[in-house]
Length: 176
Image (cartoon, rainbow, N blue to C red; front, side, top):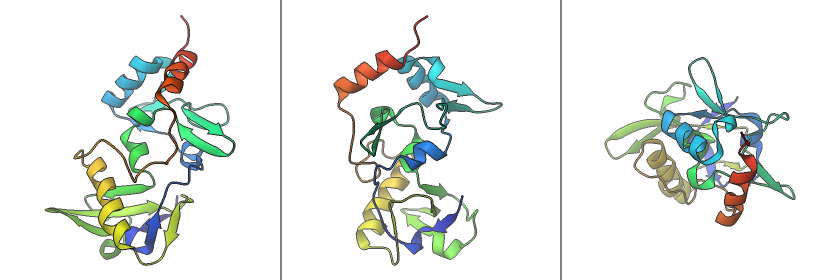
């Protein structure tokens, strides 16, 4: 994983490439795990030594990743875990990856440090645009800090219609 401070990013848009869902395991908090288990069954999650994860397919991708002619969508769009909501950004209370000045971000009274996983293909490098610095990052910070749940800028523009999600829920649940 290569990390870049946010001040090196001109803009970001999700390209619905699915790479985040193919390359990384998703750690769940207990409430996220419970929502997934209630909707899709416990077999769609995996316990670790001290963490809970979304199950991965044999090819390593997330169990909830769907593809439609090289465009990918999350089947958990309406209950997406926070780790997925804020990817590729890491929002921290201290400069854990260095570059403190370039990663510093002020949100109200909060001094935060924002880094970006450079594996994301939706990044545009350069001087941050005003929209990126004041709207997009603000949404990521609000999601990370729990002030916001709904995503607008911080997700792919493609989402699965609710009827499809209902069918998917039935098809991914194991029959006992």
